[in-house]
Length: 182
Image (cartoon, rainbow, N blue to C red; front, side):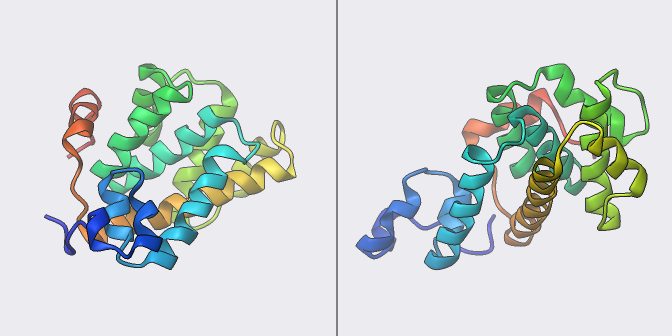
């Protein structure tokens, strides 16, 4: 159960009701801070719709953050979104394989993106080796975008965990198909 009540449109002044146009628990809790929610949405919108970073690579990075954080909310939502943006079920399973030090068979860039997300999440920074691998295929803008994505989603999982966000019923099947480790 979440630490704050989930707000509904009627709980908000008219000028903030659009914050709940997308009826998900994340928005229902962020709406407690309307201006914070607006800023959050602007950054999330840029990540999803305006960054030049390949959407599949973006989703792999986000899935890696969700996996490491053991965040059911983040993981379930981005299993769904990952599929919409080109991640296969094998790609999604590869997150766990790579985290455990195995060879998933993913291309080198995909593996470097996952490693970058792990390093930023656990070590705060991307190692020189991983940075060099990313630089072989990504330009400065794309590497910057990738680090912004990873950093933003590290903030997201911390918010989700602190708020004890519940996974919506519609997203439970994604956790059943691709369970997080215990």
